[in-house]
Length: 272
Image 1 (cartoon, rainbow, N blue to C red):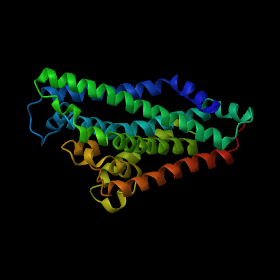
Image 2: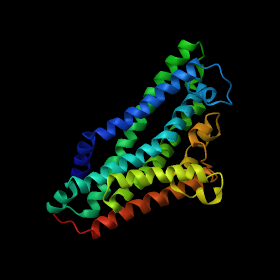
Image 3: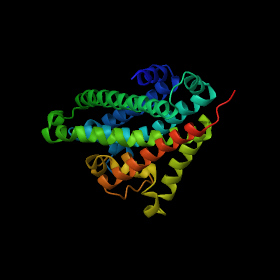
Image 4: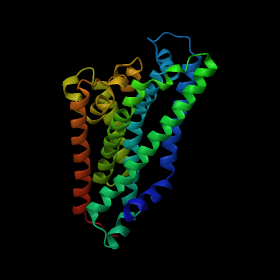
């Protein structure tokens, strides 16, 4: 627990954590504004944003929006934290104190996963409050905000969203650990994200097993099937797997990424 809380304190002081959260919140506020003011039909991006201020669909829309953007940000976040462990010498200092390498790496990522849960909680709380305000100002009804069926499935949606985003963060974390570089981790994560988006339309049977696509498919089926679904999944992401099968694939990517990070750290020669 000492390592875990130490990691939280260390990460909490990093500007990248707050910068990425700020970008998420900016996109959320922009979506709420567009949703409250648009008069376009649901076949447009602006029209799809209307779901953000229409209850009970607003809850699905908020989580779908988080899933759409937070995965890449989590990968960048994981890469930034893991890369800094090598370039700033904090990993070396920990090992010099006698810390287990594998335990240090996995505990550090546990701290990152906790920060991602905090992102989700803040995003949803602000989104729900903003949706009520935007609905009221735009003259829409908020009666569906207390819909029992929608509220009942929120815990599962929260867990799926968090799990999918954490797995994508582990990818950037593992790449940066393997290369000992923040820039390499960030660059490869962005390249893979764009590659899945581009090739998803041409090689869906292959791309559906890759991390970003599988994570999108693992998100709540309600968020995927709603009118906000295309925004949740992104342009070329196919999400061809069923939600439960995709969750298994996502779990494999998460375990594999952390195993690679732990193994590389265990066998690395740390000098200087």
